[in-house]
Image (cartoon, rainbow, N blue to C red; front, side, top):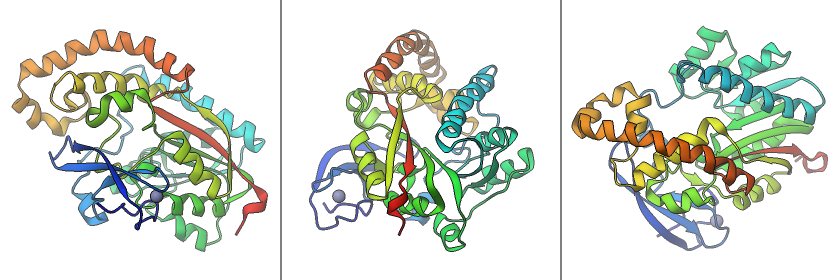
Length: 324
Ligand SMILES: [Zn+2]
């Protein structure tokens, strides 16, 4: 099998790791590792046109995604990230959030004095960002922004890079958008984590074929370094993902239908499948989630402390001498 396009080593050997099913369509893909650079990728990588068919309605988060007190928790989590960015860039400034969804993060940054802009290729999420928060969000491409000569003090790439055909090209584009000393906040699932290794094809964050690339801390760092970034801080606790991911991965490995709990809790359009799976299985998925959540509350912080978390967020500074 040839290596997909993400690293450009199309003449290298693709080492097969395992096969995995798309929980939404049931289509099977192979997870492979490039023999030259170790970048793990989904093979075959669907084309952009094919990918449109793999994104269910509501895949991109909505402003009403979380229930109850989760919004307040999320706002606190965002505040801590924004403060880290402010510390690194020396105050507020201009920020570009690439793949910003409905714009919750940049809306909060604007309220702290940031000039904000977002890009989002999901028309419905971009519309929400404009209608609900009155944000400047469009489907513009990074390379178009580079060509237009735009510059920013900070760029956010939050769980977007794993969806890109050639993430290195986007990261290089971001380097040209940032002023020297500007900060990139990039977050991705961690394929090098124990949760990924134990979960394998049932790992919640594998999400083939929507995730085309599966980063480890070292493959992500290599891409950042090649684009002229110096990682200055890596966050291993991402509470809005880590607890749920642990519970869902455990249920997948216990043999429940793939991502059943996620469907029951989050996706109204998955109702059809819920009926197919049956009310009893759905009840099992929810019932098991209680003890598993308790386990997750213990294990996720331990994984974070050991720097082995299921997702990572990296703050990287653009070096002044790397500008092309
Ligand atoms: Zn490679």
